[in-house]
Structures are given as C-alpha cells and as structure tokens.
Image (cartoon, rainbow, N blue to C red; front, side):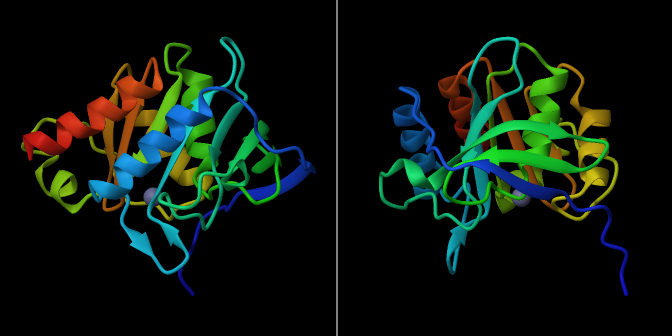
Length: 193
Ligand SMILES: [Zn+2]
C-alpha cells in the first residue's frame, strides 16, 4: 500500500449557508476559472477551489464545496464557511450544507501565515505547470498527496512572501489582497505561458 499521508477530517458544526456580499465576486471568478480551463471539470466537480477571508485578522474563510463544479448554479449552497482548522489534529471545522473542498487546509494555512492575503485561488493548469520553472515560479520541493498535512508543510516551506506558486505535479496557488488580485494574477500567469 502506498503511504498517503495524514488526511484532514471534516467536522460540520453548523448548517447555515455562507452569506456575504463578496460571494458574487467569488462566483464570477469560479466562472472565469472554468471558462479559461484553469480548473478543468471532471464528472461531478472541478479540479480547483477558490476562497476568500471573511474578516481581517481572522482565519475564517468561505471556500467552494467539495465535488462542486465551478460552473454550477448560482446558489450559495456550493460554498462552505471554514470556521477554524486544527492543524495538529488535522481537523477542519466547517458550516454549510456540503463538505468543504479537500484542499481547505492549504487555504487555511496560507491565511494563517499571511495576514496580507485575503483570497486564495487554486487551479490545475498543464500549461502553467509545464512552464513554471522557466517563468521563475516557486515550486514546492516535492509532490505530496492532496488533502494531507504533508502538502500543507511543503506549501508553507515555499510560501515566503510570494503571491503565486506551484505545488509540484499538482497545480498552482494564486494569492491576492483581494479576490480580483488573485484572479488577475492567475490570468496573467496563464498569459505568460
Ligand atoms: Zn488541487
């Protein structure tokens, strides 16, 4: 059996759907990611997850639900609020009607480490992965299975004060002070490829 690393568990602690005026913007960027193939669809979902921080100085954020297509209907049930994450115990505490994306802990670790970051957009793009090294994009030191504490460790090692990085053999992370900053950075990186 291959070692899969420590996977995070999700605990749902409330059913309230996220409700925030910036959800409109998040839906817009989900659609752009879908259209530009930055988060390719698969049967029942998309290879990508987008989030934004709810309040300055806090780690709470709203993220796309697990197994949700980024071009899905416009309802708020496709998003989940991450209330907090226990990195040591590897537990994600969330509220909403669905489970959060399996990459929620990577988003959480970034918000925790970087108070200047208010949006984290993750996508899978072959063109960016292929050109990352040539373009001088920081790349994590080695591949780790998704959803694990090991992946979080690799990202934190590489994060520094970068706004764009590549998770080796996986996908990219575009960070921003705002949702538009993160989205535009992803588009700019795609254009350079
Ligand atoms: Zn991914």
